[in-house]
Length: 326
Ligand code: ACO
Image (cartoon, rainbow, N blue to C red; front, side, top):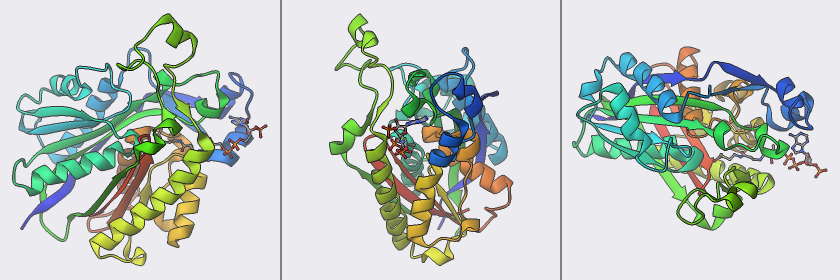
């Protein structure tokens, strides 16, 4: 029978480019340091009036057009984000309204940078159960809004953006072949935005202490990233019944080129099969994988029938992988 697969992709990134040279004027850093340690050259920053919901809606429009789907035909709309417009209502509801997806259920999914992989896995369940035929999964983040622009150890890493996928039943051999999702909350301290939730509501003290910014232990996250992406890659491939050599394209979460290189080396993947665009966007969190997949398709690295591995890690800690035949 049919199985869940991606039938349309869309992307939106803000117009404003922030280069490493711009950052040199903001904090004690250099283009050379940022390029050597991260592979990032520039990132996009949302305009003051642009919010996560706007980025998400723009990406969604592209995905719907690519799939030839009208907004009213969407039955479920998932927004994976760590930077929702508000704590509630869900950003997915704001996007649903913006699109005119009048028939859709809508909710947010919070799995940090693994959000899009988690969202794709959720969408596949609704499709494969025969519950829905038209699901929209969006990864969107505006990390620039929670970045401490005085902290050189984090502010050079992130960028804003959104990517979206329409998930529908497709005929084999196309479709999602395997899923692997994991979490380890014992690592929740390594990457977090401490205040603004119900535990530490906003107060003059939380603002003063900088607790509304993203906080990260970069070194520990780096080690976790390499370990977890290798594990998720091997497990997702095993579940799909594929050897690493059978893979056409490896699309890892775009956080740092050194993390990507370390994982690719452990998997023994040749450079031409690895997709990298972190140099142009930095780490766009939940948006990174759908933006990368979109560009991999546009550039011809992913064609109909290509076996693709999507692998992510993020705050939570969370990690996971999806193997699909595009
Ligand atoms: N410019 C210049 N120097 C810097 C900068 C900067 N922007 N940032 C840090 N440094 C300095 C440090 O202060 C340190 O100096 P010291 O030795 O005098 O103390 C030195 O550079 C080395 O710092 P390290 O932290 O050891 O550098 P490292 O090589 O580990 O790179 C980095 C840091 C890039 C943050 C790396 O650890 C990393 O990429 N970690 C993973 C981060 C990540 O992927 N996060 C995303 C998670 S996904 C999500 O959910 C958002």
